View 1 (cartoon, rainbow over the protein chains, first blue to last red):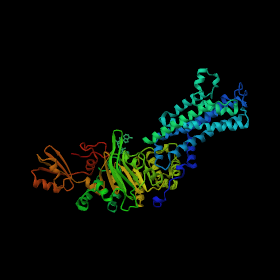
View 2 (cartoon, helix red, strand yellow):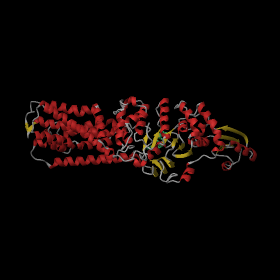
View 3 (cartoon, rainbow over the protein chains, first blue to last red):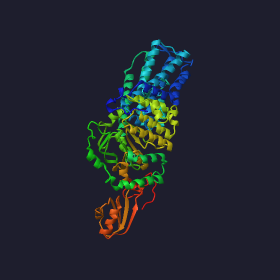
View 4 (tube, each protein chain N blue to C red):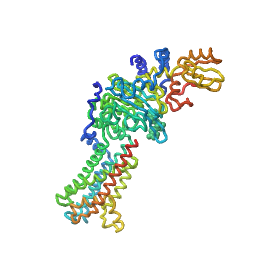
Length: 263
Length: 374
Ligand SMILES: Nc1ncnc2c1ncn2[C@@H]1O[C@H](COP(=O)(O)OP(=O)(O)OP(=O)(O)O)[C@@H](O)[C@H]1O
Ligand SMILES: [Mg+2]
């Protein structure tokens, strides 16, 4: 049936350490198959937008170059994208528990390619999440902002959510798989309030507000709204983003190293 | 290979039960017919690893251009205080079918993990086709069926194989390996819904993808039914005949005997015997001569012609020997021994003696039933 085994000299290492679009495609398909992930990352954000973003009491009030409905749409897209990328990164937790990471180690897949696949899978899901919220916004027609703001905020949300792919990896390596999703759900809810995604920070007491400015979604949330809101760009937003990015990436790398060393 | 083909066939057809691999009449008969010819001179002395390494050297096979498929040099592995592998030297030549045979916790999986580069030896060196394990895996020279885990529940069978196939520079077609592993009909099924045996076949299918030079199997037939085992081993033998090198770990003496060209007996992290199935069986067979002989030192008994193992219990001595006649003749003619009793050592008991716990022969961790014992 088979030819005799290929001789040693003809054998090659795979290109890109085993990374390929086909592999990425299968990973995305698998992620989309998870009902819970779909619910949290694609249904909830749209639902929240429809509930909070269309309220006649404030939806049409002006904010910067657009209205409040657009502002809330961006917040909900960010919430969805962040949930998506975090769950994408946290897939490693389940994969480790099932021994899949170990199985992959007896294939040519390099650790760097593995992480790249995880990150890109997270980004694809993040993209889908932004897309459905923005599509919902377009369909209901309530959010209003210039076309360039639709595009730039969408791209900023999507690319910015990569920060949380690193967070997902970090948490995925840190926690056992049984409770990783609960912990992530709770932490992200906390971060979302801290970042001002659900309630404007102006409604917080000043002490709480100062604390909130140090949470990981604060900087990113301010930055993604910037094309809509305009005005002054604070360096603290960028600093917040950079520091948390460094923390998550360093944490993920450290735990990843420890993981491969141990098993 | 040829000389053992009859055993292979009979073992292949017999019930490869998990419960009693050696207790069956059929198997013992086969053994007892063959044992005398093994001890009657065709094999003078069991070949141990030490002999082999001396003959072959440690850096290459008969042909220097053809490196060993696996070469373990003084390999130790410790997990904290657990010394799982204690100085293993082993060279596997391309084309060999080698069984790692030993009880639970012997260190089979630990050794395999080092060959696959999943862990690094604490001391010593591992070479696979003359390169590091990781290199060999990256080129698809080596693949493995692991003892447990390693599957994602939310992929289908076909997706799991397709995913793995894409990771290699070159791979066999997905449909071909599914066919060979006998799971074409469940290709669309979610892995989480597959039975244990089906999952094992799936692991096998994945291992076939790179068309590896060396295939490593860690208790590959665990969870498979009788037919599954037979198909599986038929497929493996087919590969082996085409020149694939195979290393497999097993608890079952029967499996090792039936399918391996060479058996490496591992006990508590050490190789205790290494040779062809019949060599190891000769080593493991033989008889026990029991005699009453007060006042003689153990060292003196060791000097008795033909004695291979000596155990002194008060005034009683037990001497293990493949040539028990010589031992008995010596004891009767040259010493004051009396009450001489000669008993055949069962294959199973001999296996336990080789792989069991030294002083505590009743090794309950072994999968073989504990049968009649002293
Ligand atoms: N990661 C680990 N940490 C601590 N001890 C370990 C680890 N892995 C293996 N061991 C110990 O090393 C010894 C050898 O284990 P190993 O899994 O190699 O045995 P085995 O021969 O494969 O056994 P089995 O037939 O049950 O599969 C055992 O005592 C085991 O408890
Ligand atoms: Mg094992």
